[in-house]
Image: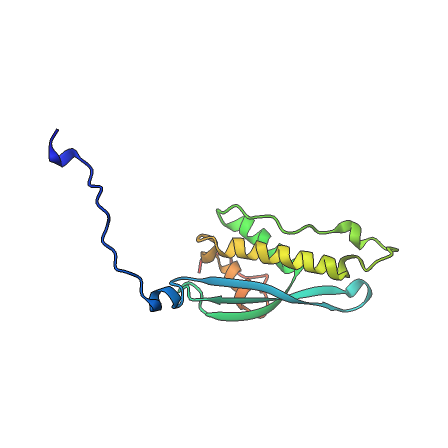
Length: 160
């Protein structure tokens, strides 16, 4: 057996990590928090909004930090846009909680604190899973959702 056919199994030489490498900013990061739920309105016009805060150093995003308020229906819009126009498998949203919206309930229904917190956590998981997907990061609807104050539902779908 000749020397040329044997695989080279030596370790690659790497430089030792110093403190600036270990504790410096990560090379690429995308952090998205959904927090500060606020219930607005009365009666049938009552709804809850959530603050969506994003920090990143990924070059594909024009803003490195943004903070916008979104309703559950805005998350539904994003999910529908991605399912229609992208090639990714879109994760499910937290449930719509139709039984909690029935009249004559003894509790606050969808405006109960425990439900709002459960939904907030589900929405945060949903948006982080989507935004972490490299193909979704190219979609114009995701950028609009995360960075524009209001969503233009008449936008032209496409890539950034």
